[in-house]
Amino acid sequence: METVPAIRISRLCKRFGTQEVLRNVSFEVPRGEIYCIIGGSGQGKSVLLKHIMRLLLPDSGDVQIDGESIVGLSLRELDEVRKKMGMVFQESALFDSMTCLENVAFGLTMHRRDLSRTQIEQIALEKLRLVGLSHVENKFPSQISGGMKKRVGIARAIAQEPEILLYDEPTTGLDPVLASSIDELILKMKKELGVTSLVITHDMSSAFRISDRILFLYGGKIHFAGTSEEIRTSVDPVLGQFVRGETSGPIPVVVEEGI
Ligand SMILES: Nc1ncnc2c1ncn2[C@@H]1O[C@H](COP(=O)(O)OP(=O)(O)O)[C@@H](O)[C@H]1O
Ligand SMILES: [Mg+2]
Image (spheres, helix red, strand yellow):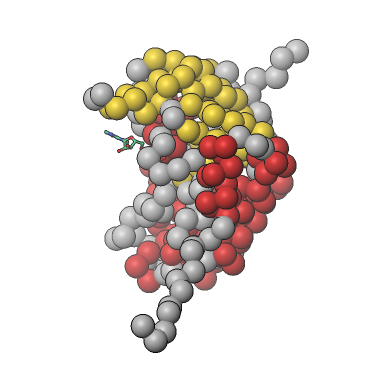
């Protein structure tokens, strides 16, 4: 029997005005695996992710979650599908006026009328503990570091125990130590909770560390797809240029004296 992938994107096209952002993007993410999408700035990575949550609608093509097309669903039906998914936004997107605990509990408060306030708090606390942050429950986002905000964002995304996690640049702007701790967390979600993950990144060391498969988005298409090893050893010139650019780090500034 054919196994149904967690996410299936078929011939997805999206333009804004005259700008064609996605042209015929197709790929599948099997259940329980971690796929990374890499690509330069402005290549349509975030736009692609927003289609999977149906925050954007395609001009043509299809998005299926667990074999179900989400493009034509009513809002009520969409709500059911969205319960299967958690999203970690690029800028963490926490509510400034709520404590970290309230941020993590927010979705549960909205959707789980069957749970008491105490039960919701218990779940939110457990998620904060899972991301190693039980001590920040009463702090506001402005009182914690960028790395911690990302972790709170992850705790919020897993609060409703989704089957699928979508991450938009989870390690961008973090130092290497913090970045690898986020990578560990993404791997932990896979190992301990069996979650399927789609991670957008331009951090190649992170992509190499966590991916079962890497997809390179370029020119509105999946230009190359392969394992970390296949990406590393590819002779594709465009991919090579991207990977080298992202792994070589900042160009050192040479200060010339005596001029
Ligand atoms: N809602 C929108 N309206 C118009 N243009 C958009 C919108 N969202 C994204 N774009 C454009 O689509 C392109 C791809 O954006 P994005 O997916 O955010 O890139 P990235 O790969 O850096 O995440 C960019 O040129 C961006 O300006
Ligand atoms: Mg983006």
